[in-house]
Length: 504
Image 1: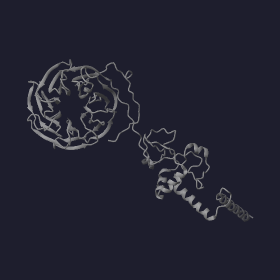
Image 2: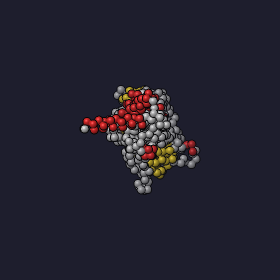
Image 3: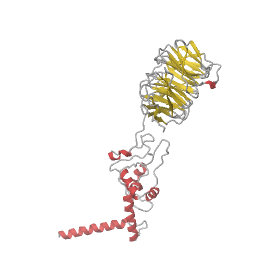
Image 4: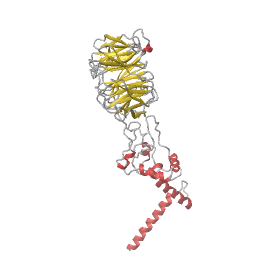
């Protein structure tokens, strides 16, 4: 009796299985499909499910999934669909596509388009992609979904699978909150030069400052009152650089007459000449710890001079165009030059050779400034202001927004970076974050043309409470911090926005 019941149940199961198989392969008109076509379609359905399932069965949107529910849909070939997670809302991640803010994200492709894409893919590659993009239990976020909270350009996969960490896009960097700095305001304009004021320097005692001009004179001014104290003549062309020594009562100057002069300020006359440059000398700097003077020239070289013997210690060759600026420091590298050939070079002072060449800028580098406390520096060019880290010149960040020919840079210990440009604009930045907290465009003096609006040099005094600029309207302008400003009256208009970093 038991054996008869078991036989009856087995026959029942077989009959039901055959009936389901028959129902599965009946066409829309109710006629059974021939056996060979039935077998072929069955094999194709299994093949598509195994090899192209992740591609074929991606839902077009969350709304469609809700409408369809867990039922299996049919594609254009009449094949059954096999969704990976029935009855659940599934979102798929599109991999291998670099999404940016400018990319127009489109809806998912139609099923027929997805199937043609799957057929075009190599079999092995489809399997690899399927394995990489379908972790068990994972939820996928489609970049075009309406409820996505990630910023444009960030593709995030909420997987929890450590093996797929390499596929996760890096989080877009955001600017940290900048330090608040009071705004600077103009409080004095000093006139006296008869030509463009091309360079400026403050003496170590903070009693006076010196300027050089296109009128071929060097003038010394009282810092407190702004009155002229002394005029020095001797250059026969524009004076392009001045600096006061911290180790001796000497003033050094250079100009477009190819001359480099050392002035004794006790006698107010030239005591040394440094001969060797073949063209206009654009800038100079003194080494902070040893008696060495470095000059840079339009002849594409920088020269190192022994201050006492006037001997040329090294000729720094390597730039292919005029060297516009040079800076010295006690640490390595001790010399940094910026050139019109768009490069910055870090030099070995002992060997007189290049240590590192930085080629990130696309236009002339006319200004370089060293931070007084940090082991970093900044360079100015019409394309960008860039910050770098010593000793190897590692790139830190771009300071974008000052779209002009930047002639000068200066920075104080409080982290205020000032950039002055050829069009008379001056931007003030927070050094750490690169936040531009103030923009200044001082009016030209009466009697000057609007085209004579340009800043050629700027410098902080020794107390860093005053900022001096040398300008094309033949004046020196003095700025100081606004004492009445507070964080409430001048708030930082900053938001943790995504930083759009440019390639350099």
